[in-house]
Amino acid sequence: MAEKVLMIALSPTMESGTIVKWDKHEGERVSSGDLLCQVETDKATMDYESTVEGILLKIVAVEGSSVKVGELIAVVGSENEDISAILGERKTSGGVSQKKESDNNVNYKENKKIEDAERGTQHLVAGVRASPLAREMASKRGIDIHRLQGSGPGGRITKSDVEKATVAGELFRQTEVPQVPAGEGVRVAVSEKRRIIARRMSESISTAPHFYLTVVVNAGKIIEARTELNKHSANKVSLNAFLIKMVAEALRRHPLINSSWHGDTIIQHDTIDIGLAVAQKDGLIVPVVRNCFKKGIIAINGELTDLVQRAREGRLSVQEYTGGTFTISNLGSFGIRQFTAIINPPEAAILAVGEIFKELEPKQPEGYTVADLMYLTLSCDHRVIDGATGANFMKELKSIIENPVTVLY
Image (cartoon, rainbow, N blue to C red; front, side, top):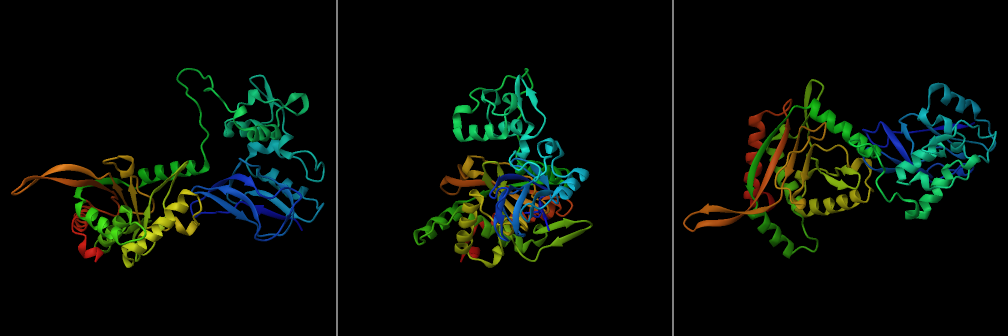
């Protein structure tokens, strides 16, 4: 009996996903555990493994389509099995991306040789005949559809034409900005990850009343400690590892900062799990170091180095970038001296770290000394944290950073 393959939630916050690539093709045998396709979620591109066995009879969600969790993406069953009833259900309920329905309304048994996505009504775009799917694919891949020669009826540009152009590479790439009326600009396609980031950050800033606390910290002692430690360590310890360790100690002393707002209650977490914001090409991700307070600086550094590397490569598991209790965002390497960050929900606070810079400071009896300073800014959810609570935490953190010996040794 044919079985439906539905879009599943590949991350706790995922509401929809974009099919990046199908690793199995129609007519191929699929076994449980096989890599079926790759899905772009709100966090990363994830592998979708099959939980059913049989022949991949129908790919419903084509590459590039956005699919809500719970919607049909494919059908698996026995060879030559009639799946018209399942496809009929999809049409009745609306199914995946109704805007693509004209590209996908052919029965698998009726005409197996014809590309499903190429069956849509011909569309004329600025004098070019192209299927809706071909137009969407060309737009997402940056291909100038006017330069393609269609292989379909009447010279219509099809999905396969766009795919060939993609393989051909820069030959068909747009070489100039499309002409648009003055003031309109150019529309840029938004990835699934960017859409989710936009939604979550908008929800955070509109739901959690933010306020900000900034301190200037003398980083000279941790620079000295890091330099000394790295003389005797095969793997160089990063500044972020030091910060995570020190923030963990401050959170232990001020547990309300390590909390979350849930409904009408505040949850004080019994573990200190600190996330570090890591930039990616199309957004950011926050890998989490668990139980930071119980780990030494070397252990934190080793774990953090591995997490950051795999985060940049898009190879983190869901468990490695969810469930944090506090987040650090460090833009110091970009030359940013001070900034404010948006809280990563459902956490109650986030620490923004600026670059280390040199400045003259008064010192007796010498007169002046050159100090290594940095700005730290705490964004707080006022539903959980009051001004005095946040201020005491920042005072504690400043003291720890300026006198790190009690934490590191």
